Amino acid sequence: MYNPKHFQISDLEKHLSFINRHPLGLLVSHNATQIQTSYLPFVIEHKDDTLYLLTHVARANPQWRTIEKDKFFISFRGPDCYISPSIYKSALQVPTWNYTAIECRGEICEITDSPVALDALMKKSVAHFEKQNETTWSYDLPEDFRKQMFKAIVGLRFKISAVEAKFKLSQNRDPQDHTAVKEFLQSSTAPFAKEMLRWF
Image (cartoon, rainbow, N blue to C red):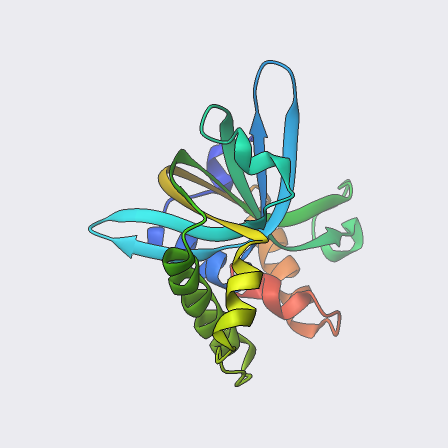
């Protein structure tokens, strides 16, 4: 993605925090003839300074069948908002759009339909998202039901070698205008405002 230097974020902890807060990623894979996309919830594994992203897809989704050969990236989008020139202190300004996004690239390191591996993946995913959601559903399903469910999905594990983060938060503006944008968000009742402030 186009990412001028003043919008680049290299802090790994911010990357991990961002993906955890916005785990619905867009998996984009492409080869010489086509582009395929899927919106999927991802869970992070961070081991020995290596980042892995785990998810599952419907077996009926054709994307997983070619992902080993295709190039891919996974895009995560966070909060975004319109910035009116009326917010700025400086004159002769134009509107812009502030947003936050991360792109991950690497290689697919596991494609599995093993019931044992899928069971472990689903337990991990459910525990993670139930905790995030502050809900308490227990992954305590009858074995026959789980086996039927596993026939309909495929597990994917990506090893990530490059993460690019773009947090476009008016950093390219004069300090007084950057402060004015922050103050606007602090006073705004819009649902995106507080989440935008988290990344300033």
